[in-house]
Length: 325
Image (cartoon, rainbow, N blue to C red):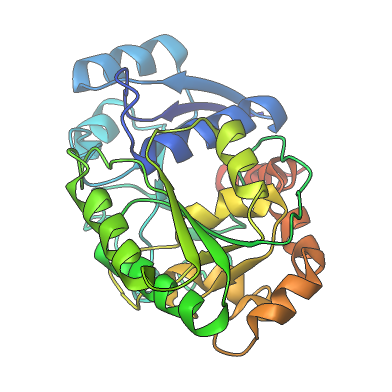
């Protein structure tokens, strides 16, 4: 059994930050299901993390990494001080090119990296790919009142294709409700100007049709968000193509809500449409995805359960540690 210090960003203000929320979810799952001993850290300085490593004496330091949040961790200093400790990062923005060209010196000195997206190929012995982990919550029983509800949740960034979603609904439906849940991103939209503008744009697109727009902005906890998603007929993510970011985390909640998902076949959404071809909006009719309900997603749902992803995680840790089980 390995001792693992899991380091994530401190977020006492409960800021709307995807990296922080993912870190909380992964840490909770590791503590609950892992056979290894997991210790949590919200250190925000080198002095703090050095003190914690001295106190806990871990075999591994696992960092919920993002260049904006954890750049203060200078791995080279820690490696010199703790030569027997392995330093691993969870990388949220892996692409296939980044994996293929992984260089631990260029990657801030982390000897190993975890990529929660098994649609990428781990073509580097220091990079390990595993399934994404869905959020945990209790979806409500879907209430079909005869009105199709098209849902989107996430930050209001331009590449998310929110206006494209409005045009898509116009083309395919005569009567519907577009439901938007867009918290103000602490780092990308702190005043909510992007979110408010996006809602105005969507309302303008559908204003002369029998399509209404509902919007909300509060940062919900996982359970409340999953309940919100569970009341949509279909949850849609029409991201534009970009090679800058890794897999999107928004569908992690939509899977947990057990409602159909429709996506564009772009890089950030590959783990949805590659595992569930029926989710690809370019090849499947909206009415078909509604008729099929959640059945096409059941296998992916099972794979993304936290307890199953943690089994994958434990096996990777065993491999890194050289443990024979």
